[in-house]
Amino acid sequence: MVKINTCIFISGKGTNLKKLILNSNKYNFPIKIKLIVCSNKKAEGLKLAKKWSIPFLIFQDNQNLTEKKILVKLKNYKIDLILLAGYMRILSKRFILSFGKSIINIHPSLLPKFKGLNTFEKVLNRKERKTGCTVHFVTEKLDEGKIILKKFFYIEKNDNVASLKKKTQNLEYNAFSEAIIKLTR
Image 1 (cartoon, helix red, strand yellow):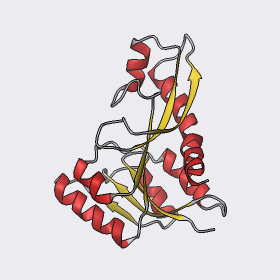
Image 2 (cartoon, rainbow, N blue to C red; image 1 turned 120 degrees about the horizontal axis):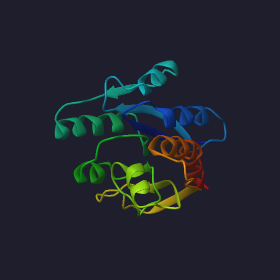
Image 3 (cartoon, one colour; image 1 turned 180 degrees about the horizontal axis):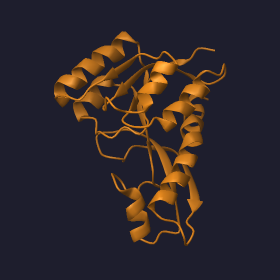
Image 4 (tube, rainbow, N blue to C red; image 1 turned 45 degrees about the vertical axis):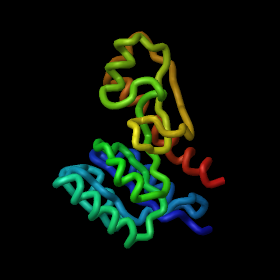
């Protein structure tokens, strides 16, 4: 099976990254993780990159210079797909257009509701009955790209920010992989 050369962008613990690495090691999973880009030198997810010997790039400087360096690395590694897995920065329009291939994000709400940050607080403040996650293509507009897949659960009376986050993350672990499979069929 020919796999898609993929780069994963992270900023934190790498919980989605771990599931993607495990799946990518399966023969019939359609991606090969060739590079990890991280915006936080203290991110737990970097331990996963080291554990599985995946090359990684850490940056925290000027966005324009950084994006140029990242684009060079993406070209060097022949990357055809970027997955944003807990990546806490907004890519510039220039970067998105310069990459020119698919960039996919996972967002912890049922888009188009609750774009951006603090989604769990927003969900609770609006007294929503259900929430979940959305996998979508990245465009120049924040959390507005074409939706690939959504997963949801019903909110219980005793749910709070922490419980919503945990339930949503549990959905995300499978949703990202399901969306990748759906796209490559």
